[in-house]
Length: 162
Image 1 (cartoon, rainbow, N blue to C red):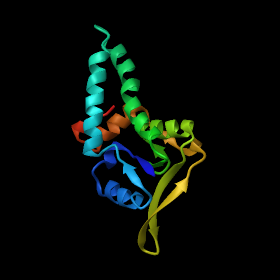
Image 2: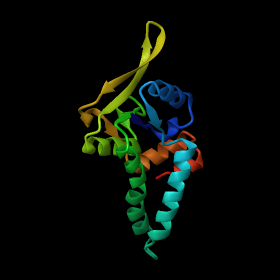
Image 3: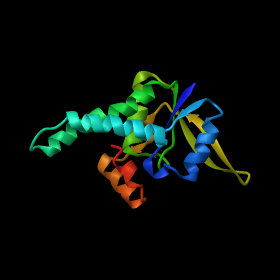
Image 4: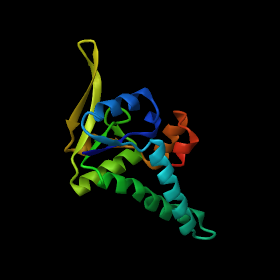
């Protein structure tokens, strides 16, 4: 089974991401948006869209059209998977992209699980929890997500993601 791993850009290339992926590999093949192969394919897709969508002297309109179209690449990868697993940025806080991915999976009827981690008996543990109600999550806007990524020092290549 293919598993889409939805997680915030500040977690890309961190020990949290590494250990989450090792954990998920026990369940199936992991589709990870921060993988180099994924990023390269997405960059080609995004660049092709950038050349197709141009609204002349209206750059704001160009971006409003370009953004949802380029995000369709992520949606296509979600739809190829039988399970979506996500990690909250903080307890009950989802960044814009993660929320978009799990919302799309929910619309398609793809099962969604959350990685919850913590300590138990002085051991660090990861658990998967089924999520049925997304009402408890606060979702950051795209602007707030971008600000958070800048503050966290996310590399430029990932800032251009959306």
